[in-house]
Length: 507
Image 1 (tube, rainbow, N blue to C red):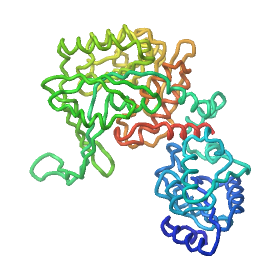
Image 2 (image 1 turned 90 degrees about the horizontal axis):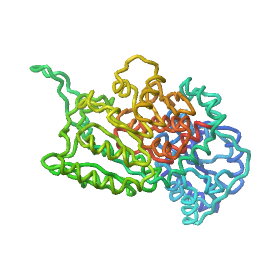
Image 3 (image 1 turned 45 degrees about the vertical axis):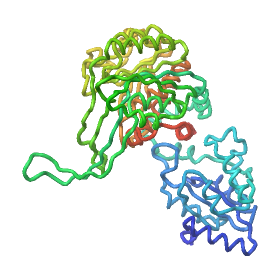
Image 4 (image 1 turned 45 degrees about the horizontal axis):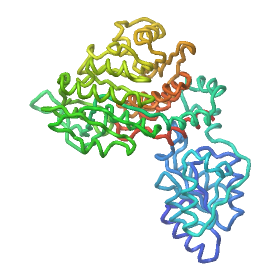
């Protein structure tokens, strides 16, 4: 019987037309319903009293922005569970992230939300006003129930192993010090941080292929081209991550005049990122082309198009002069140094001497191993780097991580340090606060490319704002858990999914 109640949105729209023709009043509820509980039942019973026919639409799996491991139950099971409830007449799974399209299709007389949505200021998505407009446009009204409420996320966190065991233990203790509202509020307060990001612009290409097997005549694997995607990577990705949280983000980078990709870059920067491009003659902008086996996203091979010789003295001086004139305008200067010839020793000195708050990552990659170390910076206020890179910089393979962090902090006179450690999570440090180890908040990994840039891009303004480093580490790992579910730098980590994930974690 419950299965018969589940229809496609198109079928349901036709069904409701017939109901309206009989003079019946349509009531509409929408949600995730990942774990049905008494609060849902009371809410749906109250909604049913507002009319004659109660329809419920369910958010599809791919739009459930509550972080890795969610939803626990797939969309079909969630829809069937809701349909099994007596007050519910019809159920449909939507094909969009919000209820707005469903409202337009179903045209309810009453759209019902829980009382916790009555204040738009507390709505993380910011969509309740949009939903109200959509309902009123089809001649309906919004009604808020005042029934007992529970949290699916809180119940799942308590009774289900949604997150890794280490994360569960960490979160139990972390919740005693921070609420979801407090962490989301801290992130929202970053809007006024004025930031400059500087580093290497990189175009990341993913060329998806399908293996055809070994060539019978050569020792090589033959592949068939399927499709390709191009992403704004390197400092461009950092700028986009940061721009979701800070209103003013300025960007300084170098492009190659021979094949600059400038139009592509401008089209793939967020509107509030203001770029200042300097041009290198006789070369192109850095492109990293990766060949990816489509079925399992295994990276097979990479070709790098780059000229990693240092800038000419004239371009170096042009950039240095520009930086000396603007650096004191910013609350945060974020440096993502990929070691591709842009950030010369002269420019490093200008940044270290003039930035009010300097956040630095110096990346080790296949093009610069051993030659692009964090220790080339004489000073930083926040160092964000992964464990192999900091150990390489200090020529220390075996010392305890705490000792390594103290040494790099002393070398750069850095007040704040965050070390990312892959599946071991991250470790943060501040002299008065000491060390904090934050475990990974998800083991669900699709693509690691860009996760470190996301961690840096969102934690740097947190560090500049003076937030405690245990909070910075938690936010960074939450960002990382979302970033490893994104293919390459296809999209930045956006505020609303992060807010929802953090709220779910801390229920």
